[in-house]
Length: 204
Length: 251
Image 1 (cartoon, rainbow over the protein chains, first blue to last red):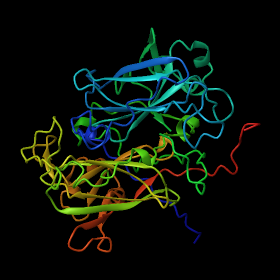
Image 2: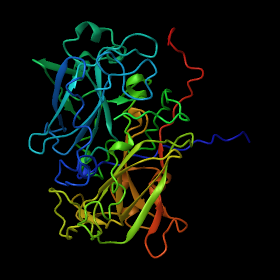
Image 3: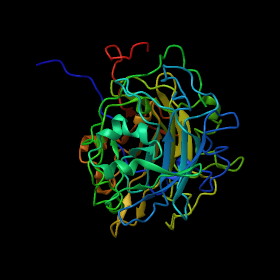
Image 4: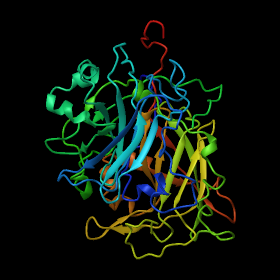
């Protein structure tokens, strides 16, 4: 008998459920006094370098009803394309930028909102530069395993055209589901869980 | 928010092992009705990790308050305590290579001893406990270990089938060192007869995977005359070794 591989299985996921806010954004759902503030509500400060942007959007179910109970997290590099934290070996990111945001959908409109900066470009493993993008992770009641996707910027036509991930998407219409559209300094990025406009979700 | 990592833990920079999506629940699980309209139906786009997935947010001890790991007291009035069976939940966060994952944030939330959540959308008739909020958080230690005090949550009915009940459970949100390790799960209690009946548990196909979510009574960690202890280890995705990884010139 050959040797055995001593590896463990990843802990299986379960839905965040309808009360995901209690654990992740307790102040948002009225549980005050336990944590001073909800994590991830502020990504930038007055000294953060880069172009200020607001990202807004909603997450829609298969009947085009916005989810009002989801939580969205984002992760992105700073304006120079460097990620905060110890896994970044290429340099040191802007100390005034957290790179990570968390926002519960508004209980009435379902809208999420992030105040952030335009991310810099980050290399693909083979050295090609990726287009600027922001990683998204969506959890909610009814979502059994958190959903990964990316926001790209619709006005980055040239960099999007050479992005290794976008180029891998076979159907042009599906590629467009990853584009946030600009109005002033606000990008709108709506996410569709199902249907003709279903967002491209990732297995990463 | 970023603390300098301990010098004995070099930065983790490898790509993650592929996720076993047959071990996790599928997106579309009609026994859990809410998943029907919230499950993507098109194929996922698979690609190897880039820096956007390999890196992730890191949290420092500065965010952790004195009572963050004590749900019996962190919402209670001074001198009071939450009602319910006093328990300790402890374990380690490991990766798929069984290596400890230190300095990562775990958040947890749960119903009170009667099975009632402190949330405006909660409609169960069980009483609120004025001294129980239901949330806490910890950072794992250098050996990946964590522990917190709480009360054992009660089971509760929920509107799915006409008579569906959730087994007693605690929700966990876990950060690793990379964004692609991000995980939400639920911990169940050994011996609960509601576990095999629950439509949310049954979104998982493999009985061994359900067992992985079931904490075991740990008499050796129990505190006599105070609290029983339950051991719950969490496994995050493992990373490839970077020894033989192709790197760009100059990197």
